[in-house]
Amino acid sequence: MRISGPVDNKQELHVASLLVHCPPAALAGTTTAIAALQGAEVHGADPVGKLVVTAEAENEGEILRLIDRIQDMEGVLSAILVYHEFDRSDATGAPQKTERQALS
Image (cartoon, rainbow, N blue to C red; front, top):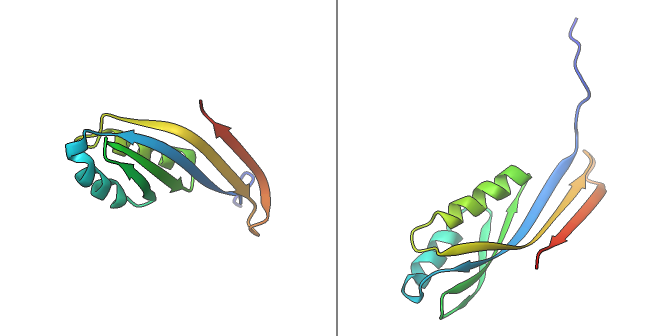
């Protein structure tokens, strides 16, 4: 006989936005490197070395690892979390909870 605990059928989607700074000379390479990461997308760039980036992942740990990978890239001076939101749904896909955090 097999006894198991409750099954968690909830799914999450985490979305974060970041402001990434790099030296102007590293802008093109940094843009390409970030765009190559699964779950990351570059939405805009400023010639002075600023990038607007979004990250999407299925859980908080994956989002944090993605942000760490960006911060650890050669040429990246900083990656600042600006916004974080996650939606939690049940196994049917029905929304259960949405939480938003805007950081200032």
